[in-house]
Length: 418
Ligand SMILES: NC(=O)c1ccc[n+]([C@@H]2O[C@H](COP(=O)([O-])OP(=O)(O)OC[C@H]3O[C@@H](n4cnc5c(N)ncnc54)[C@H](O)[C@@H]3O)[C@@H](O)[C@H]2O)c1
Image (cartoon, rainbow, N blue to C red; front, side):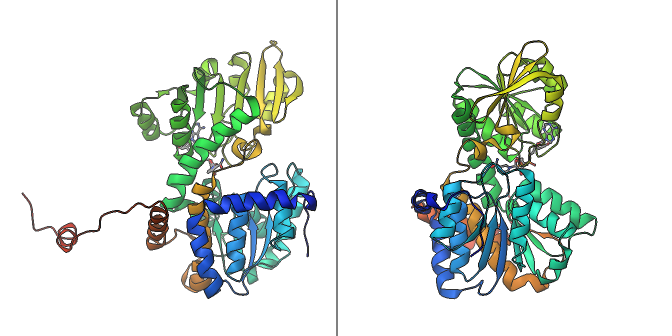
């Protein structure tokens, strides 16, 4: 078996955590039970590039139960949980290539090792595997029937590939399922980002001024949770509608240039580049804490910060202290990489249950429907999305009403008025 992980001896600890997460993933468990019987992925080779966490391990077990032959690598150099990687190899026979803290060269070597599998399906989170495949491993394209993509940034990149005619096979945008972005991005990122900031710094959120860049699905969740913990929350946006929504949700909204002077804690969740730049760092208060929870480490201009800093030193795990020429200090968390996975454990299993149900059912759908899907980014069919919500509700013991025949008719007709 091929693999590259930190230490196989960590497997026992990893297995216990995988089983713990499994307890809270009833939708994925029910899919695994059906997959064990039906084997919808029999003989399908999957190369997956995902955060190597306990929840991902349960997705890998589900795909394997369905008959898939899998190789897994990390979708971020800092997000791997080494004990999970060890258990995936030792206990579940999944060929895994990921080590927490790997450098960029190792990160891409691992992506290439996952691709050496000659996949039929790619499962990506951020589109680094897909872009490597389209630029450096084009020889593998002919074996591929389709793929799935987990996150907003990956979907943006794939849509750009589709628009330029570069995308060589169909991909399901798992992120665009309602049972994904409305829960994972909002409640998952909202909670786990705060968790990451607290674990890295032990900062008191109550009474702090908490600046969030981006009021998308992640930003909404984060703002809601920061306010719930007693922070004074400020939002920055570039979209007038989102900015207006933030205002009416009761948050202060202003440009980053103004917010930079007020914030104690800053978190970017925009999916965009250089949102916090040297001109902002220069006006920050002494001791400001700056983190990112967007997919890539490009939202904070750390290279720009280095140029205006007179010294840098590590102060705590995941915290680097930059002393500016003015003598003021700015603290960067997790090297600007997504802080919820760098310093905490990522999203809770309860929410990844739905995201990864979409991944598993997306892979099944792609296997049976790829011939009829064009080389585009596709949404998962609405009935699959609804079924996931129904199973999740059922697992929570919650029932909902059904339309009466009379209501169904009324909702699809126009004749009846006042
Ligand atoms: N940390 C995690 O575990 C996790 C989970 C899900 C998504 N993500 C990532 O988080 C990022 C955001 O995802 P989302 O689903 O919220 O996206 P989204 O598209 O719903 O929201 C992004 C928001 O940022 C705003 N924005 C863009 N540029 C900006 C700028 N310069 N200043 C201020 N605001 C700006 C946009 O107008 C938009 O409202 C993506 O990179 C996504 O891949 C991370």
